[in-house]
View (cartoon, rainbow, N blue to C red):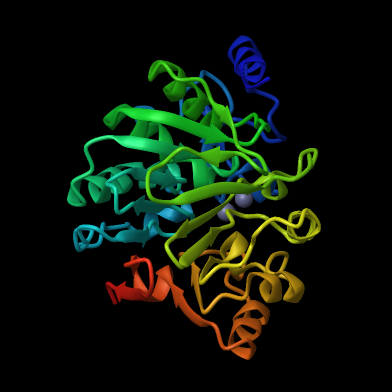
Length: 331
Ligand SMILES: [Zn+2]
Ligand SMILES: [Zn+2]
């Protein structure tokens, strides 16, 4: 099925992705329904030509994102014999790197396109030589954007993604990079487990199919190391949360990666109660969506969940010895 999607994407042009004229540089600036197309409000992008690389000359009108130049944080190397989870600071978007006690490397999402080099910088700082498992939670640009750069820089053994496609060049770049790596995408869905030493890692979503509702398609990973557990939710929203609860899988976790950057369309009270985290991490940067929302921040506070944010704390690292979890913040 995923192969079929790749074929479709390779044989059709991803033009007619959404309304809007292209300008003299062959692209245009997104003005309406940008999130739906995996773009930021005001993001300059291309419909045609199979390239997201900047043309020469660069568009005369700078996109809004270029105002905030992202710099990589200085990270502490993973602790030997422990599990380290890095909620990487990639600005607005998600990228989480996990080093297991057995030494395996897992990358969940890679931030936006322009964060790709920063993610590679982080992986180099952390001494990563190859990646055992790469997970693309869903095709939105703030998650899948940087993964093609990582694929070009690292040997990746397995790539997991939910069975949903998207028409953006950003997503097409990812599919092409997977193909060039000689890999086929393995389907991420509820009850699929990763074969890794010393940890139990199982997808708990997507439980169902969600049409073109990309966030709801998010691959959600539950990971247990000793007595500690983590839930990585991507951008899963209420519908998927309800389906996860209904599927009676293990959702309980000490650490919750809050869904959809703290949007109020995720993290229902019921879901938070079922997961019952002690800690929450919100992966978020400067954005125009109002993420994280005060509703979700207040909900976490009311449940006495200690909450970290990559926009305030920069990269947040959780270190587990299998019994207790400690946190390291850059800020
Ligand atoms: Zn999304
Ligand atoms: Zn997102």
